[in-house]
Length: 158
Image (tube, rainbow, N blue to C red; front, side):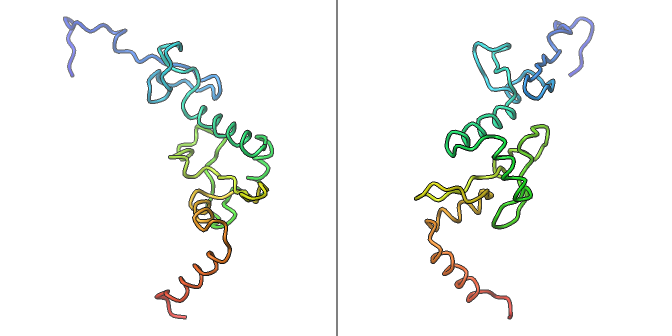
């Protein structure tokens, strides 16, 4: 679009307003792409950016559900070398929202694996491995049979 000096647009109407997230201290465009809508907030937006709020609510949910503090959760991640206990895929850097790969659909965030009968925490898994355990109803016989099935029907020569 070309603007001439007789244009009805003012320079201030073209400027993008920004906000500083109090959690990560980044200056971001004050738009719903970066901040959730909130009627009482400045510019009608929440004070914290979306990425920081995702981290906050994820950790709060883990703390409430499994009684694990942020520090305990970080220690579990370190103990597993920031990888899934089953397949070894690396988790996204959960505590650094500046990381572009973090929280893409939450797919790479670690999942707390626990025994549904006793409530004991077993470790951290990726989303796919956590679903695998859940779909097998934590039945080791089902998982062993699945392995046998895959080996029996594998096209690779032995």
